[in-house]
Image 1 (cartoon, rainbow, N blue to C red):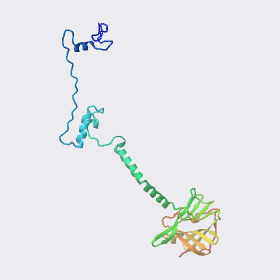
Image 2 (cartoon, rainbow, N blue to C red):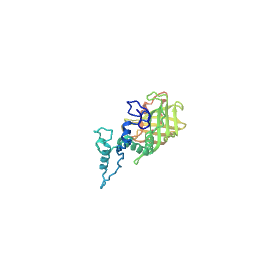
Image 3 (cartoon, rainbow, N blue to C red):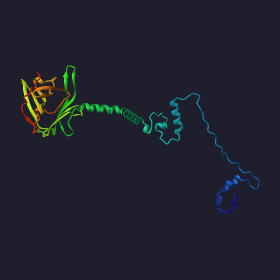
Image 4 (cartoon, rainbow, N blue to C red):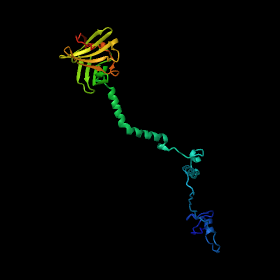
Length: 285
């Protein structure tokens, strides 16, 4: 047997040319024969052109989404129960732009824009609340602003602090610090600079004025605390008095409701504190 196209010899049961790959039956069907018989016509291979149709009326957004879903529904890999496969309109954004994520992104951006204002507010609140000269690791015995208390309110920016080395007596170290926030003008630490003296006076019945004082030359600095029936608010319980000899030259009141008192003056005891009558007049009445 020979190939009708190239004449190459073929096995008797071959139906395709081993040399050129021609199918014998197909070649004979569409190739003219020696007897003059016309070959069978080939089937048309033209592809119809793609056409687009436009609606005469404008479609609404919902109709556009539905028509888009209808066009893709046949070839969509989603199950028939999925909202997209049913052609339902979708309002949520996919992926990282989903509704929840989008809200989080906008929230982070809003916080970033407000960050300078938040930091400023935090620093202002911190500076307002940290009215102390006590160092890290020290215990605040008492601390707060002192100044002048009048009918118009409190006026004063200086801070008075008494700090100790531990939270309970007896104390091995007690420090007095005075000045604006962050700028100590006067510091006295016992026993490094000397000792504190403790005194108490009772100018009126059921009223006691406790004091913790120290001396630098002729000047005496006395922190006083009034306790008893005549010392109730709005009278300030803590005062800072300064004496030149026995003459009072300054008296500052503690800021009402904001001055921090964690330990009464009478409970400040230890080797750094000695009891001694000052001979000074703490009563301002």
